[in-house]
Every structure is written in structure tokens, then in C-alpha cells.
Length: 117
Image (cartoon, rainbow, N blue to C red; front, side):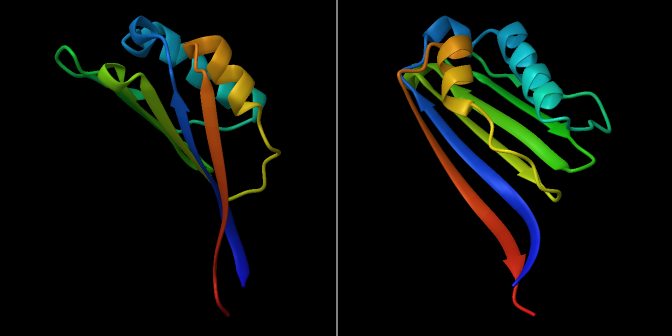
């Protein structure tokens, strides 16, 4: 198998409802992830705020691939996806999402991506 990237799929539950609707909180979280993992945006993040009781979707295209989030205030859930085609260290998803969003539980799945050769 040839390594072509690592994908992190994160579910944060029990989040504080108001924080899941706060674009500034999510933008700061994206900035923290990008800075601490030394990622390289190729454009500004795009954000979509949905009508109440909905949340926010965000995406930033990276030189390494992409970072996305979707918030569901009505369910107290935030989901994140980071795909990198270059190795990156593990990041403190649980601690960061507890601090930024008040998450009570964070599940991180890591998938090494590749193809058979």
C-alpha cells in the first residue's frame, strides 16, 4: 500500500449550544488548528450559517488538502474532518474541542489513506 494521506474524522458531543452557532469561535478554532499543525490555506475559509435552529458549516482548502466542520446545535454536536496528504503529528482534538466548544465527549478516528500497488 502506498501512503497518500491521513484523514482525521472527529465527533464532538455535548457541546454548548451557543458556541456551535458562534462563527467567531469556529474561525478561531480553525486558525488554531492551522497554526499548530503548520497547515497552509490556499484561500480564505468559507462559512455558511443555517437558519435557526441550525448551525454553521465551514471549509478551508489547504495545500495539504482540506479542513471542514459542521455544527448541529439542535443536537449539541460538532463534526470535523481534516485530510492531509503529508504526515502531520496527532493533534489535541479532545482538549481543544472541550475548551472551545464545551464538548463533553470527543471521538477521533484516524485513517491512513492509500492504494494498493
